[in-house]
Image (cartoon, rainbow over all chains, first blue to last red; front, side, top):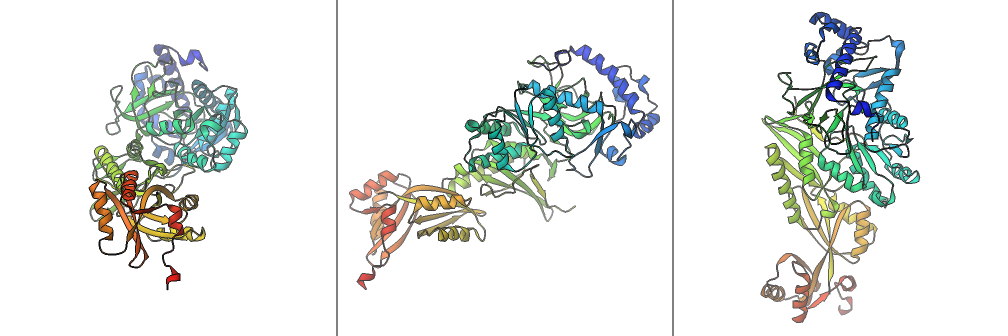
Length: 432
Length: 151
């Protein structure tokens, strides 16, 4: 049940010794880059200053802005000849950042993806349909390499073309898929359209959900619709991509591979570590990357560490499902709102379909939020009162959670823009 | 006899009703009666048509959200007190009317009144016991609003 038993179940004190040795090496490697060379000089720091894991705090935090300002080669710690691959963030927030890998970097990354997949029960007898964009996005190639390393049969179908996805799934008895959660919800309506029942007419058993934060309810919905176990994963291109953290079969938090990364959770305002188990911003340090080591990287993702050991026997810490990003946070009438909060609430209301859209508008000095919600086809009974009740229920549910009374509009199933990639959940029409 | 009413969920904006009637025209579906109820941003279009199943399937094929429910279509006299007789009967049996609408069959002779009630079977029995004629979808599609022969 383990891909690498010794590493995965290593006692924590040994794991920490391991991390310290690797951190020293990482600092040493990083000092060869323009960015860290200057930074360490300014801070009067070198690898000799790292005597315990606590000393990591001596290293200043790195941000996405640093990566942008030193674009494209300012973080390179090796000569360009050593590089074999470039990836880039999906660029959903500002200018894309680029990451370079050496052949060893790709090997290590591939190994933790394979380890993650193996952990969920995927084996070499499986057929893996990778329904993700390949190209610069790390989710496609990252999973592809991991699955090949594991020994499964990989179908590199890529994203989109729903009917073909379903056909291929049936033709080659796909057992494992990698899919964006909002697309999984959309695809279920295409299944219905073509008269194929994913529970009955396919061999699917595992779905890897990625590239998009989603709620527990969404996971449950996908498990129910497809008859699979759906596993949440976490990754970002700056830290390789997928495979940074992954759920085990307990589905209770994602194990961060601590032989590859050091995990910190900080208060995004004071930048100090939060007490263990409390929520804050995830900060990660690469331990095995040669081409482009990144130390204490602010992910802008909010989560917490789940205290205590996991029943699966792995000793690597677990982080909770990402609550949101500090940068997709909406501020409305002084209240901080995460789209994922709204999604979570909506999915709890019976009658709500799979798609929604948040629209923000400024009227005079007031910001207004309108939530357009697709109604579930089966829910509609022809009764206007029932729809009105649903609308009020949604307003009440949202009000209790976000403390703002949104306008709610019910719309016809399938009328909101469909997503074959990352779902557009928020349209902000407020002027700066 | 039980009749069927189709309800279509539609956003309250120009073109939605036109879409529904356009689809029905193409499908050669005849509309017997129509009512629309709206809230601010969405509404429900209720239809009595000559082929409810057929209409439902072509509307759904066009991506519309449709539901079909049983209603009672009653033949009443087209004269003062005609509707009152029907409503009093329902009231006596404590049957609640959710929605109702009607159309004239023969001026000053007969009209059809469609009632959407909370207890369809009971309503139907009460009306039949009282000697009122109820129509099913087939009968609704067969009736001719004007009897040309008479003129």
